[in-house]
Length: 277
Image (tube, rainbow, N blue to C red; front, side):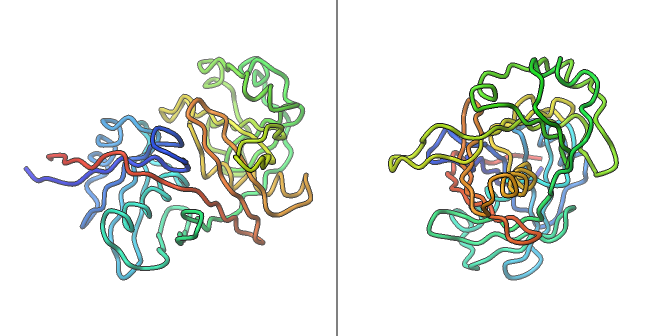
């Protein structure tokens, strides 16, 4: 039996018990896939990240939900970088992570941590049969990138949404652009000031992924790879301030930079523990 350190970090959070919690393990080598999946299931967090060092500031990185490995995860990448800097004593100013979605980068900034991810501009699609019934409202428009994107009329509609998750799980989503099965993001323009300075956010969102073990994800970095180019085009600006209106909630500063997006947020370590395998 061997012992391994496990961290839990609240990412895209302005304090503990906000944002999106992620598990993080820094390993010498990856465990077998079934062990990685079992740990993620045991943690029962939206994602658990596993990183293996390749060289100075360079890591292989994988993410698992309780139900499956996923190709891209923003909040667990931010959480991994936070662990490396704040808990593991790494001194690189920038980390490079090799992932299923290609190379990703994270750097420290005055506002926290900035992720450099590939942009995922969504394109209009026909609304799948049963989507409106599953959401409990008729979207104004539907698009697809990595995930399905349902645009609602206003922030109040996003906040009030109570989808039928069993029905949402059964909705047949469009294929052809790598759309993740039964992962649905809803969004609308922002209306409420959320900072002490009275700064309003540009858009709000929520995210549901029942088939991979996530009912509602608190703050979804990868969805903002799709949301950022959509709202940048719609609002005519490349720097945006977003809020994911889950029960925990979390703010994401977004910037569209060509075919990349830069997502900035803070993180806080909730626990450091030991697991025995």
